[in-house]
Image 1 (cartoon, rainbow, N blue to C red):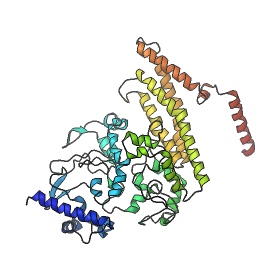
Image 2 (image 1 turned 90 degrees about the vertical axis):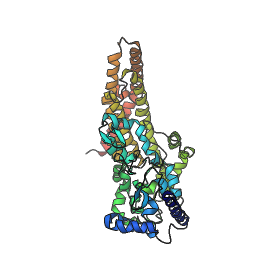
Image 3 (image 1 turned 30 degrees about the vertical axis):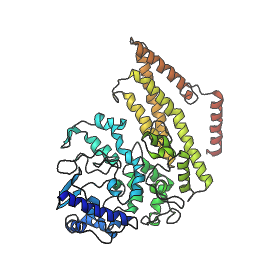
Image 4 (image 1 turned 45 degrees about the horizontal axis):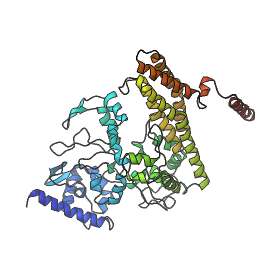
Length: 481
């Protein structure tokens, strides 16, 4: 019998045993001969990996190296290793042989699609503005940007290419980006959260696991969490969290504090665990203007397009009610929605309209104009910080890192840059530019004369100004010494 056929039959037998018994409790009656051989070697050559695997549920279920890494000869990432055909990369498709439900949910999530950032505006920065094609590897002789390889791809995931020897190309390996595009066509990386080879549930439940990617100037969720009462309570009570509990139901197994996983993924008394992190989110705060998550799901062709935001909010409220009463939760959401409405109506919608009106007066090369960076940072950095801050009850990120920065740069940089474009082009000999300047001037004038911005022109309504002065004086009378 040909080698590839023997290998295929062996793999099928292992897969059949694993998937059949997994549904009955994820246990094999004994470890396979192939895995035993792997273990004998790796126990000496990779003692840390051996130790991690030995602490895992996989070990207790007799699931070893071969059950996860086995491959067949015709697979693009397959290579021979001490008489066995294996693959270095374990993909969601591999994990799904036993964890079918979890992988199915993950595949329906935005996490699985994170690698699609490679075609986005963000990637223009890393590939072109910040980078060049100087990082050349066997599978990428044309070169890649080292800024993208070491930055964007490590969180979002790059497209893994294989070298002729069956090993992953060093441009995108090592890589545990959560939206990694794998050689077998699957998207994602389970080890982004369940670090190999222990695959600890406790580690996946800790905020720092999420903070590997959800941090920094444009999406500082971990910093916001640490500032919030939730983060403070977690650090003070981490020994009460029972992070290693198999069930880990909020309100039953722990109540000292929530983690990211508690709110977005983990079980409640009414809900099972979900690996689709969008099923409890009622705003998608990634774009210039926040949208409801079902619209974002529809754009990616995800099944969540049929799940309205009201249902998702109800799911999250179910989590909140384990520690807070209904009035508290309802009031929080009124505050949250109010901040989103403020940001959108005062800055995002008019700001985007002004940017679009300014485009005919700009160089068509993205980020070659100073105003490109100004507007990008207003919505992509500062505006996101404000929206993420309020969503997680982080007041400093909502205000000082958020709305204050939005307002400062809107009035001190964005408006003057727009006015400069108008002044430079209003007398242009190019009739198209002259018309565009007139259109931009009119829109800018209308924006600044609106009730949201007329203070900037010293045109605040006298009655409103008087009311605010009286409120300030009353406050000072009551509280100043």
